[in-house]
Length: 93
View 1 (cartoon, rainbow, N blue to C red):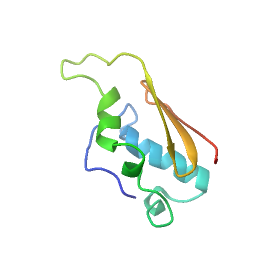
View 2: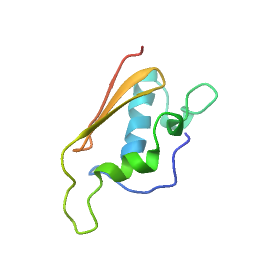
View 3: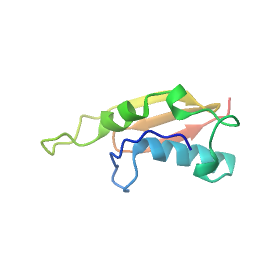
């Protein structure tokens, strides 16, 4: 599982980038740690994991970031991440 070293966490205690990996792994029926190249794409080849994690994390002053969403393809799936930490996976292509 090729993830960044960033440790920012969402409400459930995991980073959003980890939650993306876990959602794809669930769709594939594999453990998240088995979602590695060459069989699977690395997350950083689709999107910068640190940027994804920091995009919706709580600001340094404690305020939540504004609402928003990010959509990107990953491992043949369409992934949508929203500012509330939800990860929606559809596909495969």
